[in-house]
Length: 173
Image (cartoon, rainbow, N blue to C red; front, top):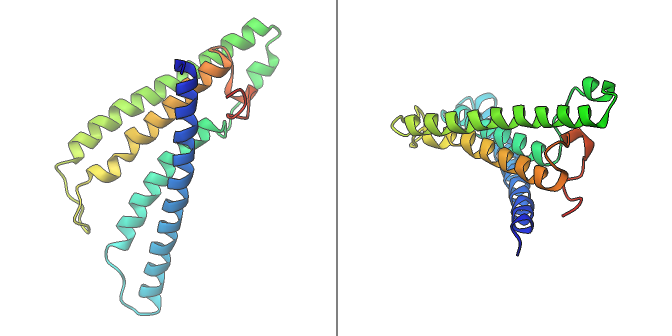
């Protein structure tokens, strides 16, 4: 199996895993939040740990959702310069510039997330019997997945392609 096909297969597999994980996380945050509201206002006995769990679930939903949006080309974009560009070469350059900036940001987020996760491994949650490594791990996981999706996009569309040019990640796979 050529490398390109393996990367595209892995990109699709990661995309499916993200969708399943997002569905599970949204269900979990809904149940936890409902239980908190019910216990606080109906039973007058709030669940102490529920707010912290909901916060951590929200962080994971945000980071995995951001990676999924990179794969599906779901992030918003300001393409006024790209549309204004008279030549295909200039449009291609702007697409490359945009992708390089996005990749650089994701790389910084990945490295910072790894460092923060490592530092948080020695700290413990105030309401849960876990280290803070688990919530912080969402940063490098989300950034790494988003960076991988961007690289897979570059393989299929080329370095000069702008993510707004091709909305379907399944196309060409």
